[in-house]
Amino acid sequence: MDTLAFGAIKDCRRLTNGTVELVITASVGPRVVRYGFPGGQNLLGEYPDEVVPTPMGPLHLLGGHRLWAAPELMEITYAPDDAPVKVKEEGPLAAVFTQSVDQAGLEKEIRVALDAKGTGVTLRHRITNRRKAAIEIAPWALSVMRDGTAIIPAEPYKSHDEYFLPARPFVLWHYTDLADPRFTFGKKYVRMTALAPVTEPTKIGFGNRQGWVAFAARGELFVKTFPWKDGAAYLDMGCNCEFYTVKKFLEVESLGPLAKVAPGESVEHTERWGLWRNVDTTGDDAALDRALAPVKAFVGGGSAG
Image (cartoon, rainbow, N blue to C red):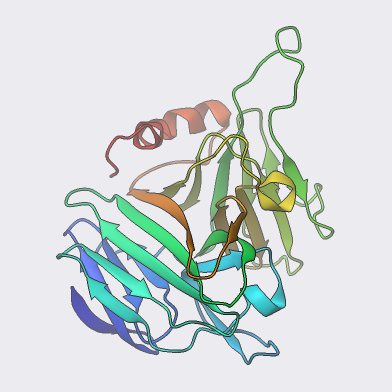
């Protein structure tokens, strides 16, 4: 595991298996600030100047992939994370990055483990309650991407003749406009595209039993998988994945179930990532189905890349 600078972030760690590489911050965060093929593009967005003012001090978003606590409350979610991160190596392709206890009384940790071959990565997100009282939270894994298109699978089609009950939640925010040109609604997929000229934000969320979402940009395809637990309590009216965009900024988010966490206890949420080259996702649903064939194998437990 190499130590290096990434832009203005002087202390980072690099994991690589020769096929892909990840860069994770150690002086702030933690953030996964790069995931890509060596020498290739970074599909994770780099936004070093994005700052959110909070009563606890400025929160530097930075871009990349981060771990937050839901529900989205200023006094819990937006605690600044500018302190150095504890790094524990677990062999040449894995490490645990642990944040100092923040002003909300939470300790956040991301374990990053790169597969020995291919592009697969496993990220275990853990939030530990260091407060004096129990708290109800859900782990919230946010991947801030570059400009591109998010792809969300629909539930399998069933005709009205054979099935009457609803398939899943589809959740809108007060500022969501379904006539927005950034949305494409198909029979098998929903797509959201980041468009730089559009300055108004928009957001949608789903209860996603298919357990995966994708992001496509410039011929490459990023996929994350995450669990769905039947009967679990998911926030935001039943969402375990959400998507937010403004200008070139597009977030691909997954959430674990809401849990009551006692002092000293933790809640966890795991994602698997994969990355593919030379994938054309610009066609209709039938063409997209064919392009996503290797992704579906990965979702079923196969290798990535």
